[in-house]
Structure formats: C-alpha cells, structure tokens
Image (tube, rainbow, N blue to C red):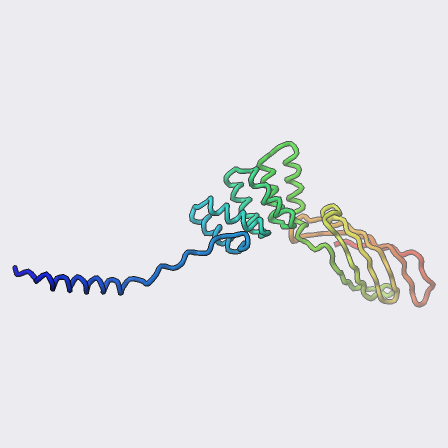
Amino acid sequence: MRLLPSPLLGMIAAQVLLTGCAATPHAAPPPPPPCTPGTPELCEWQASQAHSEGRLEDARYGYRTACDAGWLHSCLALGRMLLSEDDLVGAEPPLRRAHDTGSPEGYLALAELYERRAGPADLPYARSLRQDALSVGHSVSEVAMSGRVGQRSGGMAIAVLVQPMAFQSRRLYVGAQVALGPAAELNGVLGYQVFPASWWMPYAQVVVGAASRTDAPVRPFNFGGRRA
C-alpha cells in the first residue's frame, strides 16, 4: 500500500476543512429580547410559550409582569395558573385585578377561588360573583326605541335608560322616555331586569309621567308599563 506524501495530505485536509466551513451557517439567530415592564405584549407571549414548555417559573414571571402593566389576559392566566397549583393566596391579587376591570371571566375565576376556600362566608360570595358575571358585561346605559300601535296611542317612543352595577348588579334601572304621536308624553321609567342566562334577560318596567293630546286639555298624570 503506497502512502501519500505528507504535504499532499495536508492540502487535502485543508480543502475538506474549508468545504465544511462554507456549508456551516454564518451565525446563529439572535436571542429574543427580554421581558420588561415596558413590553407587556412580549411578556405575555413569552409566558405562554414558557407555560406550554413546562418552564413554570418563567411563565409566572412573564404573566406577572404583563399583569402589572394592566394586561387583563395575563392577570387571568396567572391567577388560573396559581389556582391549578393550589396557591389560593397568590392567585387572588391577579384575579381580583381582572374582576375589578369588569371582566365576566374575572368574576367567574374569582368565584372558583372562593368556592375552593369553602369558608362560611366564601360560598355565598362565590354565588353572588357567578350571578354578577351574567350582568357585568352589559352596557351601563342604553337607548331604546319602540313603536306604538293604537288609535289613541300610536306613534313611537324613545327612552334613555341607565343601569349601573351599583343598582343591584344592573337589576334595577331608571330612565326617561319621550313619546311622539297623537299624544305627546314625557315619562320617567323604573324597571327591574333579571339575568337567568347570558342570552335571556327578561324585564318589567313602570312608566309614569304626563301626556297631552291635541284634542284634549293637558292630562296631568300618565301611567303605563311593559314587560318582556
């Protein structure tokens, strides 16, 4: 067997090394930017990735940083994550923050926390949270238009109604109504609404005011009502 001269072996080795270097990528991609209080969207995304990969400490940090910056979904995610770890004390602040923003999901998650505590005052509070979750997502005020059918009361009515959460969790509402037609009316409205489900909200209201007709003197008192 004839061996190649040493200089020739060195040239072949150098050529192989150069070929390998040419096939190697120039540089690795840069690491992702760090999560900071000024980048809540990035923190939430990194926390979601870390959670799915089982890096729980990184997930908690990312969710907490985004929650402190006011990101509702991160507050809910952090609270639910801590709930799954039976950390009821740590879960309450982010869930309370989500609740205070008026989020129905925040109400329900906080209700779950109090149900798991199961103290004498916890379970009634959890039930009230679940009831309020059905109404908290609705508007504080609304404008309602309706038509009227009848020889003496035909026309249309426009009402402006207000029902904040302070009014028995939006169950009570008040407003004013103007009706135009054969009888012009200015009425006050008092109503009561219940929320058996998110898609079913029956109500009843009483309308009290004054009405006048073109063919009759001013009628000092007007009373009516409706339900649905």
